Length: 294
Ligand code: G3H
Ligand code: ZN
Image 1: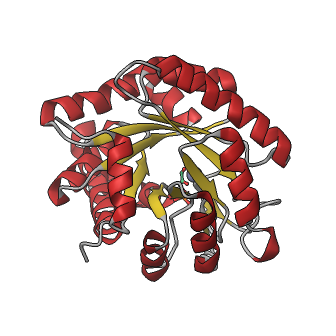
Image 2: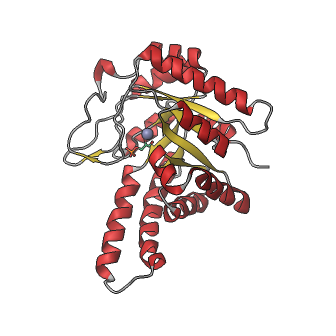
């Protein structure tokens, strides 16, 4: 029988590696990410933000991922990424997501605790007694909110210094909300700066938060982070790493050149194959790194 997402995360944490989480907007990206994970034999999480899942169809996104899991007996999971309202959490749980993220990072601390706790209690009450546990992730520390190319660091985002998530605050947040997973602000940033490298991760801070909360950490904003920072993050309690901007760039560049190089081609599946190949290659190299295979 397949292991649960919770078991895979616990295993990754014990082995000081991380599971890759990649966002999709369509079937070609799903095929690419699944193909990359399967080539390496590692578990993988598909993420869909509110916008991505509305585009695909909330229930359809779950059905597509479940279909792969069942047809190939493969550990591929689906996460309701960055969910900002209780209503959307309810919709995701009803649709059958394996995990949900309640994103209260922009809220004042006490309000973030209050709303996240409400989500945790709701999700636990809904799935109690059923064999599949739905995991809830909380967010503490704002790191921007878009997987795109950035001119500057978004207003309000914290990427360094004392404003990063504090271990004591994280400990209180986890104790009071009961989340299974925590996403802190530790030098990571959603999106990639156009004209400069993204900030470095604060590894001592990741270690201190991990020791304080004693639950697996999730690193958002993985695009643009150095290989070495990724490896050290995984060694110090980061069990899931999110990547989106990098694969969006790979998708767009491959699509543009496929269109430019084949002016008379009108078969979508022939053009999209190039985008799928590029997303697969980008995913493969990140997954190798996160899984300690390179
Ligand atoms: O939830 C999605 C991610 O955190 C992706 O961040 O676009 O910077 O890779 P990224
Ligand atoms: Zn994110």
